Every structure is written in structure tokens, then in C-alpha cells.
Length: 454
Picture 1 (cartoon, rainbow, N blue to C red):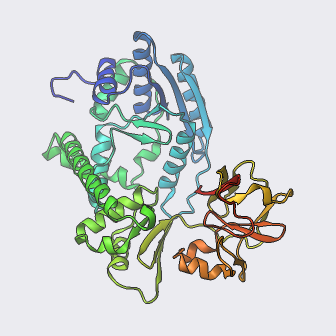
Picture 2: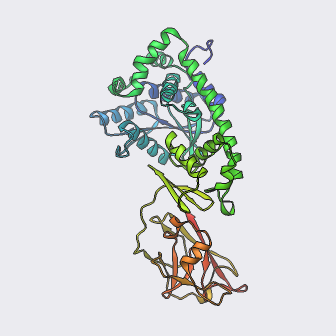
Picture 3: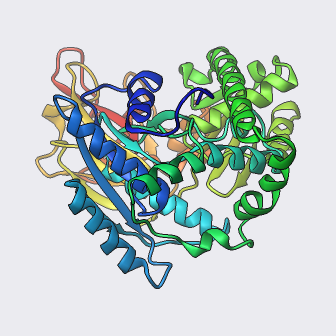
């Protein structure tokens, strides 16, 4: 906010939404509504803005009840009453907070809250949260004290993709004092959560003990830290652009970006290699590595392992090196060896225990020959060892183990490939091979198998 600005107002919110964040005037907005001062100000101002714009934009409030406070039910009721007064559609969702992941109750509650909000958004809808300039300053300091890089120091993004829609923070240019002045002027009634005073939370230490001291010497500290966040965001965008370019130079077999070429990775300087690996993991939706985990990962690229395969893992991630490829994925439970499912090829077959979806696409002269398939559904099973397949045009059968090895199928994928059986005989190996006598000839109607990750 410029010093000449009068403070927070409905007009200032309008400029932030439709000029600074460049959101459509006809956007559909959902406010994450806790009933606290900040979110009450945001909702109240939006309700006023909606009333003066023609056509009015769609607006609703969504309250997440974590069930962690004895008054949480009363808070949800209070939020419902406020929304009734403002004629805003309201929904309260109770979530289960699972802190078993080991990153603390506060982080678990945030994860549960955002997961619920993502599920509630439809495509092209915008979720609005009431983060303001003071929140941004606190986040920058927290990230500095965690030793974060550029992406961490970028702190709270003004707008970003969120689930099927977008997440925007239109109040980042305004201070907590601006919002309190608006709330007091309009005589708003808000919830004070006493947990915001608890100094066992690091953010509260920054808020109540560190920033007051800093502001005595640097009165514009909030604005300056927010500026640093913008600089970091610009630098992070440049690092991502470089990583995207490097990713295009390092594809694995058949151009797969889920697998990176070890040889191409080794050609990168160390800093660019580390930048690419972070980007690659993040864009697969996988948890970011710590500094030590990233060092272990770059070492896995730089040095030959004792065998042709090697594995690194941390919570939520498995990284495998096999031959000249590096692959990462979320860990999956061990497949059920007794898997035996019927499939008539008429629709997709979901295999969540394997992480795959199996499809059958009509394709003349490819895949399984329709005329030679039995009337009974095919059976989908897993490897048990000893399977054999005679490929089209070959006189002899081959052990499936040898075929997989010769085709460089990664060891961790082999036990998860669905095998299709017709009348008890192996007819196809996932989307890799069709066995005789079930392979379609050039002039025969067939079905091509497609394996998609879930």
C-alpha cells in the first residue's frame, strides 16, 4: 500500500482484486472464514463490494472446524450468524486433524484445512484468504530462520493455482492495524483465538516478541520484508524457468519427464543440478527434500552405486536410480499378491493398490484381437514368477523376467504391472506386450491397452 493510501477500504479491496491480482469481475469467490478479525473484515468488505457491482459476483464463506478447541462449535455458530447478517452463503466443514506425520499439530491442522478447501472448489473458482502484510513479514522471518531458499523466502504468494481453481490473498498490501481500524469503524464482532498468544508457537514468538523490537528501530519493517518477499518470488520464478529448460534437456527413456537421464544430469553444474531436482520433485507434487536429502540425491547422481539400482527415501517420497534413469514417486504399499480381478474391457479398471488405471482403446491391427478373446471376462493378476510369453513373429516363448530385464523396466515397476489372462493363459503384459495367439493382425479389429498413473 502506498503511503498516500487512506488505509483499508472497500475501494482498496476492489483495486487489489481486479487491478493488482487481475481477477475477473465475474469470478466466483469463496472466503476462508474463521470468524477472526482479518477474515471478518475481508468478508464484510466483499459483501459491500458485491452490493455495488453490477452484475454482482458470486460469494460464499466456508468455515473449517478443526475440532481442536472446546469452543469450536460456538465459533462455527458465530460464523453462521455473521454470514446470515451479510446475506452470504455459508458452509461449515468439520475436519479430522492427523498429527501422526510428525510435523506438529499446527501443520497438521493447516494441511487438513487446505485439503478441505481444495475439495470444495470447482474449476475457475477463487478461494480468498485474509493474509495481510504483517502475516507476510512474520513468514519471511520464519523462513529466514529455517534457512529457506528463494521459494521459501517468497513466503505468501498473492495468487496461485489451488486445486481446480485459484487461491488469492487480496489483503497482502494492508497491515493488521489497517484491518483493525476498518473493523472498529464498522463495529464488527470477531472471535479472538487465545492460541494466537501462545508463545510455544514460533510464529507467535515472531509476532509478539521479535517484530515489536524490530519495528522500534525499523518502523517500516513490515513493508520492507514484504518487498523482500516480492524480490524472492521474482528470483524463484527465474530459477523455475531455468529448471524447466534443464528438464527438457534431461528426459529419460522415450522422453519421459518422470524419469531423468543420469548422463544428462551429470552434465549440469552442481547448483543447476540441485535446482532441477527440487523443481522436478515439486512439479510431481512430492515433498521437498531437506538440505541433507538434496545432497544425498545429488550424490546418487554423481557417483555409481554398488549395483545397477539404488534407492533414497524420505516421508512421502521414494527416488530410484536404475541404469541411466532417475525416477521419483510417492511410496505405495506393497501390492496384494493375490490380486485377481475380472475385466470385460468395456470401461476403465481402477487399480489403486498398484497406482494404475487400465484402459482398453479400440485400435485396428493393434493390441488384443477381439475375435480371439474368450466370452468370459479377462482376469487381471500380478507376477508370481515363471510367467512366459511368445511375442508376435517369434517362434519361441520367453520368460517374462528376461523380457522385463531386456526392456530395462525398472525393478520397482515389475511387481506392479497388471498381467491379463484369457482362459488361464497369459494374453498381455500391461501395455508393453501382447502374447500369441491373442495379438491382433494388421487387418483385425483390436483393443490397445493403456496404463495410466492414478
